[in-house]
Picture (spheres, one colour):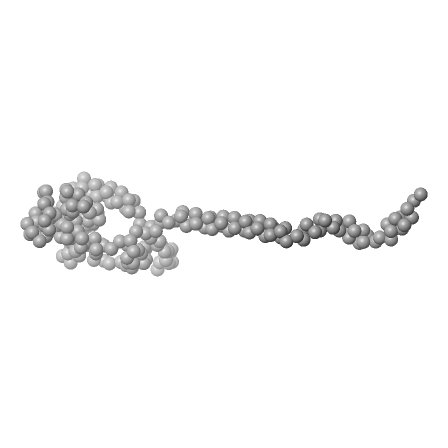
Length: 235
């Protein structure tokens, strides 16, 4: 015998009613899903996912920063680079004195007990000396006059020494491109840069100098006790 009431119920359900009937969860499942601790667990999991995602983003940003940290220029003194014709110009009495003013008394040869018992030279002043002499050699060729006392061997030494010094110091200041008068893009290098305090280094080299004099052939041993400061310099 057929259950006429059951058949009648099925016949009376519209498609929408059938869908709603099928999708309705059992009472127990509904009570579980609406339980407060379920929402707590879901919120906790969502928090973990959000935290992990954020940490990955920040870790990526930190990694990118670490990838460029080594490019920060040495020193914290801001210097505006600008062209000064006194130094690259032809040798004159004025330009020679300007170059000599870049060197400390003692030519950068120092003796300091915390550094070495022996006499040592600060590299920057050796490099400036080489640059000065190469400038003389260039003008020897340009104007036919004799400005340099360096031999070809000494010139080659300075070129190679300066190459390695530039690579060692590896200036990482950023230089901008500009439009030249001819309309070309070029990088002259006249930018605001971060540098080491050259004046401070110059003063320190003079204070702890091992010699007196700015001309290599004229340098003399120090005899003034105030300059020696109790040091025993082994010449």
